Image (cartoon, rainbow, N blue to C red):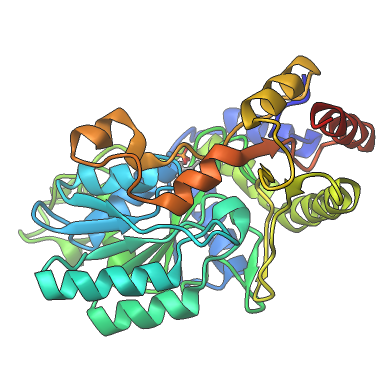
Length: 385
Ligand SMILES: *Cc1c(COP(=O)(O)O)cnc(C)c1O
């Protein structure tokens, strides 16, 4: 089976991890700050906080922005559940904004309309989580302008998007947001096994996220409330978590990070091969907004139901039978039983639902070989016939 996504681990990645395993520190050693500095420097953010997953990064980001019970967090239905769940972890109410049918990202016009209504009813959100779907940036200029107007904080969920660019700048620089989050799960662009990172330009937000990832404990005397009892002394200032990344994960991340550009250019090359080979089939291929350079975490085709009667399910099952490990991203979050129990229902976000009914993610990863691309495109052609 050719999977839809796969990590690319080199001998130098292995060596970097083994070196840490033979060192004194498996965790809380020198590799985590080195990895953080490398990513921050690359994307042009002032601060980076590495944690054990993007889910944890989203959680500490929401807490750092003081999201609480009674507050609201908005995100899109077309995402992994973690983009919404982080709001629930803080006791906030979650709501959704429909997607743009071309980019599959948060629709700026739907956001504008929903904000106007929320202002009238006194239900404005505190935090908005736009998701850079498949690695293509959202319309951050438009979203940021609206957020400024209504006093809303922004967390970019860039789990798909390290190595992508928006208006010429690397995604992660937080030019239009308070915090940006990356995921290092093995199917994402670079991996640490499990892992994530929160980037920000705000010193105080960075300090809060650092505190929260390790039990709310500080060892910095100038942050303490009491007096420093001795060099063993630490203080728990807040209720934090153990969300730390290990040093061997950070070593893997640092080594992988050296190849971000290589990985993304290979993904972009695969995307343009797919674009060429799949043109003319009854498929809607990924639209690329001219402001963006996608990292191409995913390559999603939609079955064009205006030009074929074949159902998505049929195409999907034929591809799986042919050994192509296709997948679907994403089941709209508001239709999950957990969110239905909170009052959401089918029909509320028609663009996300329509997109979902026709989408298939075909294999996309840096190590995907040319012969595998041939197999995927031949199988897709066959499945649609
Ligand atoms: C993968 C993913 C996450 C969660 O990442 P983890 O590192 O697995 O916690 C969150 N949001 C989106 C959009 C993702 O794709």
